[in-house]
Image (cartoon, rainbow, N blue to C red; front, side, top):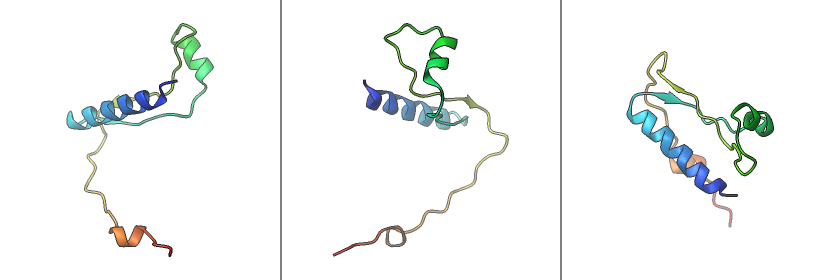
Length: 76
């Protein structure tokens, strides 16, 4: 399996969508067998991600990010 390749491609797709002012969501929890059947995939192809993309209803504002000190703990 090349899950890492699929993950990198999915992330690049989401970054490209964002650059085009589109919104997307990485969906990784779905029934792979049903998806493969609906998409009529051959047996050697495995669906590992779905990415719905569209225009957002509203624009997101800047997100708050905690400092590194707030989100890490050093255990000695």
